[in-house]
Image 1 (cartoon, rainbow, N blue to C red):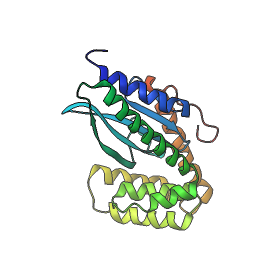
Image 2: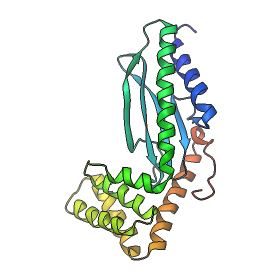
Image 3: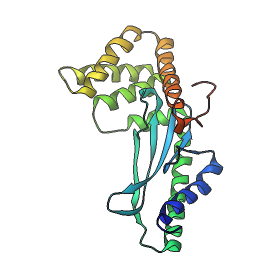
Image 4: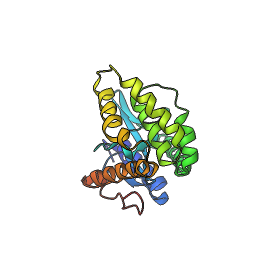
Length: 220
C-alpha cells in the first residue's frame, strides 16, 4: 500500500459506508452518487493541492439543468481537511468519521424526495442570481406551487434584463422560449420539468462513469 495508501483508505472506507446504502461510485473517482429521481446527492471526498487527504463535500445536483457534468447546486463543504501524514491507523479512523458524516448527510438529503420539503429548503436560499431563481421556479413547478413558480418566473425576467453575462443570458433564453409560452398551462409546466430531468439522466448515462445510473420509472 506504499505510495498511495491514503487513496486506498479513502476508497475502501467510502465503499464500506456508502455502497450498502445503494450509492454507486462515479467511475474510479472519489465521488459517490445517491440517485433520488429528480436530483442526485453527490458525495465528494475531495483532494487538496497542498497535501494528501480528504475534504468532504455533500449536496444536491438538480437534474433539470441539462448538463453533462456533475456539480453541487445545493449544499456545501461539511468539515475541514483530513490530512494524511503517514499514520494509516489514525487516517483510517478519521476517514471513518468523515464517511459516517457523509452517510448522515445522504440520509438527510433523501428527505428532499418529499417535494414540499425540498421546495421549502430551496426557496430559503438567500443568494440572488438568475440561476438560483430558475432553480426555485423549477422546484415550484415540479411541486405544483404555481403561484410561487410564476413569481420566480417574473423575478427571473427582471434579473436577466440587460444582464449580458453568459449565465444570465442562458436563463433569459429559457424563460423566454421555454416557460413563457406555457406559463398558463400547469400540466405543461410540470411536464417541462420532468422532461428536462429525463433528458439529463439520459445524457449522464451515456458516460462510462455514470453507467450505473438506473432508469427511474417517473424521471427516466
